[in-house]
Image (cartoon, rainbow, N blue to C red; front, side, top):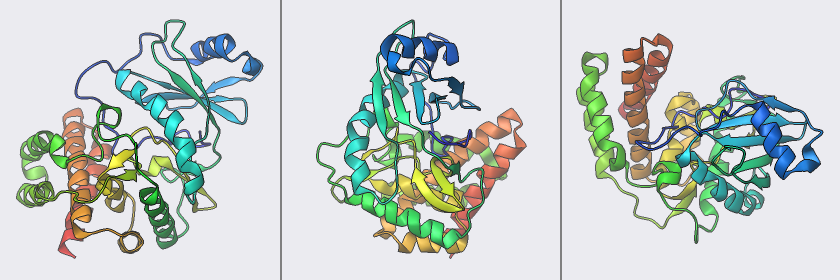
Length: 316
């Protein structure tokens, strides 16, 4: 859905704790071509091109110049198709930035077991691959977008569950995983400080009515044009509930000045900001543990930096 092949790789992406994660059929351009020819022959003359590198939860293909095809890689991710088809057209006109536009919903077939989607192609380059011209302007635009998203009527919206890996629910769903990672990291991090802060976040809870959240506000899902925030993509983990998970970008991407602007641009209470730190520490801890076990120094450095930003923000 974007000109940037890296888009869609979000910091908060997290696979299922069990169950199928891979469709039986090989998801390639040939399969997409056959599915389109069978179900949407009006697009048979449009070329199909893989968007590389492929994502974890979906494989994306460009269809001609104006469309994209998105196929879930497993059962859990397939739950997101109907949700996006239902809710994105409802959300779009109430938001200050463009979001993906569903064009058609495909059916399982030809050995591929899941529903799938056709979207409008969204021009832009992900913030993971391009320079942000002004951190404060970017943070302010993002804060306005998330504030507008939270203001949309949440009646009947999808609550936390398997479809979004329990985003919007209590942080304690991942508590055991986070605690185990923090303990296993030992001297790799300031484990006692991280543990105390994480448990403080666990003690906080959302007390308001459910609100809309994106669920994976990450640099790969924020599109830029001329260095400015231009669109927000990949609503697969969206839902209604606690919006704390949407604040994680404050420590994964934003500078100190950007973080201050971001926080000031939204009606955030201290508890929501604290739980956002908890979400960030959970993912950074498990990612750091995995990176160290795999010998991936680059990924380890990213996770260490996130933990450091969270702790620095706490000191301030």
